[in-house]
Length: 121
Image (cartoon, rainbow, N blue to C red; front, top):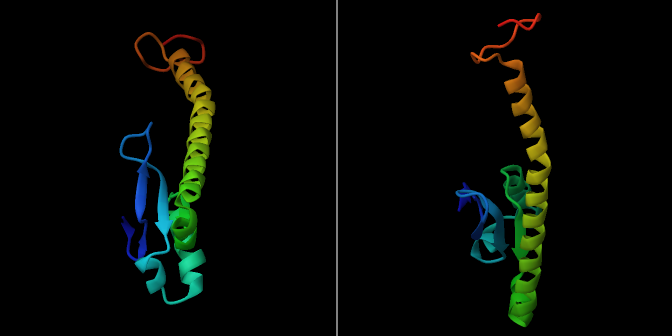
């Protein structure tokens, strides 16, 4: 999944946001090795994907080959960290949304129109 030559090998669906992804897993498989230069493989692809809103987690084939359990553990830890941070930032923004709603309601008269400066609607 992705755009043009900037694709993610595996998208991890966000458990709290239907239709959104928590992260993308990128492996150093065929797409990685087809890149013309090392800079394209390592920096440019990840930067483009991150600018598109992806959290990119990379799995290197030697890590997978020699100790797949440890590679999975690193991915799981990073996913838990991303989810925890996302939930914390969502929780922190809720009071601001509630205050904005309360302010809008307080500023509206009983008919739903804003109150005049003198309190009359």
